[in-house]
Length: 250
Image (cartoon, rainbow, N blue to C red; front, side, top):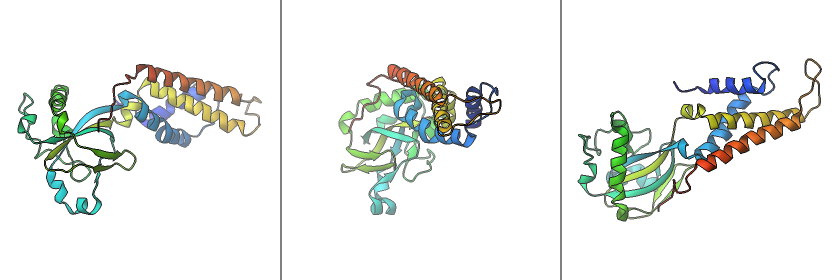
């Protein structure tokens, strides 16, 4: 069962307070903010296992829609972190994957964004999901000569196609994994704890006062120890990352 963000906050607070030995200093709402606005963003951009390869099929008829005529770009789903390449699909044999997979151009289930049909919607329900994706990727690798030029902004999720389109398209992308899957990752938890410990030290360092029991926190040590935890995670993430795992091919 995936860890919820509330459970993650409890783990962080248990570490910061040494399982309740000291009173809470950092509010839960600040921990939530640090998780969503800083920690998740860093991991999605730097940790290779925070993303998974997916494929989206795009029928050429999208060019005839009023929205595309007006904007001249597509809005991709929020989970799409980056696009590896876009391939022209003009060979029906691309869909012969060795199983009775449905014709991917129809009845696939539409995503929450216009014009995109997700290969994952149906194939993800099959027991041979990983095998299908692997075989599909092998087929696409044979079609590299048919790639299109494009520009993708991962912040706005806007995709601009820079090449004349005369066929259906297949988008090879990296999608973010679910946040709950990230919460249970040991590196992520340690990074969040270090981030929150450093932030708590910064907050305590702004004022000089005694806590109940007539003791004071050592704010400088807390900031230093928090940074050390974060740096240790960053070093491990970089050591595990294969520098060739993600190469943009445009």
